[in-house]
Amino acid sequence: MDADLIGNSGASDLLQKLAIEQSAKAGHRYYHMGETGNSSSLSQFKEKFGAVPHDYAEYRIERLPLTAVDKLARNAVKRLIGFKDGS
Image 1 (cartoon, rainbow, N blue to C red):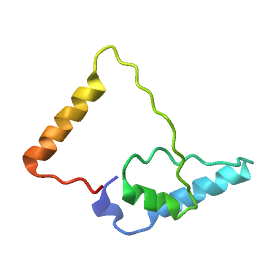
Image 2: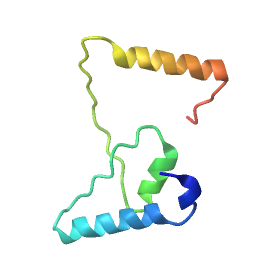
Image 3: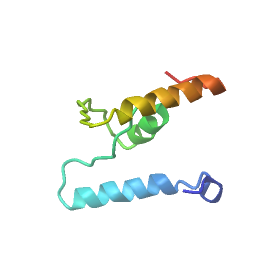
Image 4: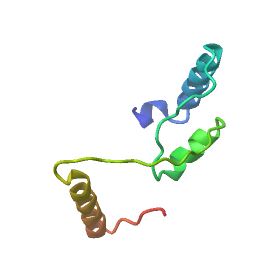
């Protein structure tokens, strides 16, 4: 999505509203808005539509420790550039 083109148009809000309405019309009781991870801004966006967080266990089975290596690399780069996580 190009933020410069969309700006504060409310397009994302409208798309979510329409998708939720369509889901309700189809008789669905729940609408999955996707995983949020540790993003507080994404969580706040979803809460505007009545979303509530649900904790769940996440398992990864890898032959090679790709997730662990990725996490180490990301943390190293963050330290290098002085990035501070919001949490």
